[in-house]
Image (cartoon, rainbow, N blue to C red; front, side, top):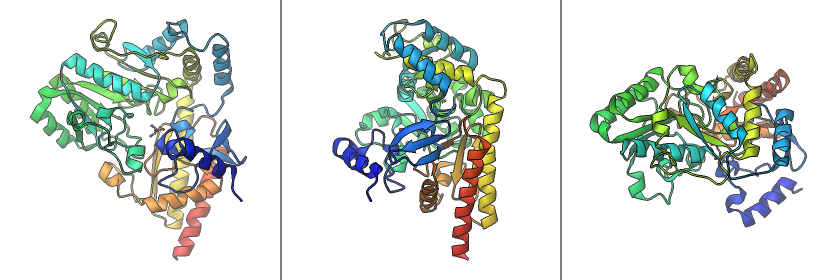
Length: 431
Ligand code: HOZ
């Protein structure tokens, strides 16, 4: 019998390229029909056929409180009742900007935008405008949204679908982007030795989360910081994914390194479209209307999105919030690893705060090259068995997963039990 998901997917493909509004949703690398979701509550989502799943995608990171958290829904409803958009300043924007300045290391001034892509694209322009240089450094497998200069050897859907360097990006634009290996300090030092005076900025995911999860080496992040300082380049930490996710002060707080500019998105909008970039005051003052770097947006600082973001940031400031989120995420990861080990399945996993990576490989990868050694076919099989069992992981071997505060031990243990059942089954088949 054709499911409602199949019917909707067929209809969607007629009117939308690939049937989806963002490629990572399309299930193309894992195969099968994407689930069309009708509703979500807490840690669970329900698809168009009424089947429910424990959700580890969380809208790709924003839903740190889980789906339809009552306080967020109430704040959104109240804000909407007062008007959806003004295209003029509001008091709540000042409150959110103040909170970001207080909680994110190095942010002295911040500008609100509508997405993570806008934040990174604007931060790059600002770094170039501020330094008067064109060259930027990014790392292979890191994804910073879909602006032209950043779609070079990118991660996320670009990597999943085998087009890490997008068509449609002029060679002249890509030529200004120098792509280096993540976690390769020697390569980074050599690049600065060669052309440090031409480099406007480094943009880096301080914990890479768009080629699955790759933890940074301490010396690599230190080198990013020190080389930028020495050569007058701007260090941009892309914390769209890690901000308020790996800890209360993001990756900067976790590693004790302060970037010059930080980009934010996902959690700061609590599920609504909101991004931000901020950092050193002297750099931020180059932005219009104060300076010559132009940046704008009709819906920037949208009051409904800001209301969702504000209440989310208030909720996650509760004492013990991150300790509990981290403990739950590491319970998931250690449960999965133990289940695989007991069955002799080649598998590893790790977590940082509320995000995690799973790898069909003996050890967590430390580089893009090691990520590419993961067994994608094994992941795809695992993904589908879990999906049938009501567990929704990201439909790609190259994405990080997310746990929310709504994931209790019940959900985590049910997930581990389902994985254990699968691992035991495949190991008995192999025996
Ligand atoms: N940045 C998200 C995780 N890789 C994906 C969002 C999207 O591309 O739809």
